[in-house]
Length: 118
Length: 111
Image 1 (cartoon, one colour):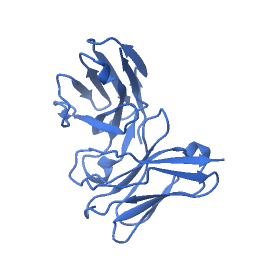
Image 2 (tube, chains in turn cyan, yellow):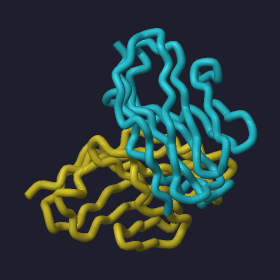
Image 3 (cartoon, chains in turn cyan, yellow):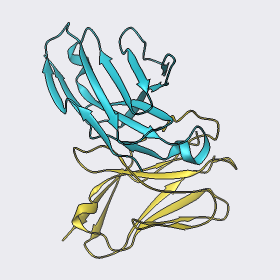
Image 4 (cartoon, helix red, strand yellow):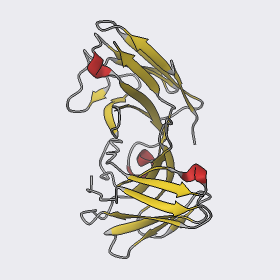
């Protein structure tokens, strides 16, 4: 298993500003992911953070809005850019030890970052 | 990913077994079934996964039907702390980690 921490745990931001969320894993992992959970909704995958290359974004999410970095095997950041109230959500980081199959489906999640945009 | 169908909500008495069903009739031969849960205000927690054999760990048991079209997660002695939303997920074998979280089952364990 892996223990995931996120910073900040919550924040209140003004529209038009940007916030960078950090995700730290206590061990080296092959895959890291970023999810969004809007109020009262289930989780939606934003992107896969690839170490040493650009992130892979899901449909509906773009790099200009959600730039992601993954400088090493234990750390990743997600930036929410030019925020609007619609970006108010919980943002969650997860990590997996696998590249495919059953190991990839076993993911460990951070506690989330609660973002409110005014 | 195979589509999964779960009841919206279930109740269970504390100390009793909680049996949470999931239908995944379109599952293919190489797709595992995963169960996660999300306790209020926390990140999702991995519980268990299986392919075709029944599985058991310290948290739960997973019973998969022989035709693999459905499965049941069993919490043998539910406690109040097991109150959560439980998600059944069957990601495709070639997926890059895209766990598609549906609405899940809201399990309420009552004293």
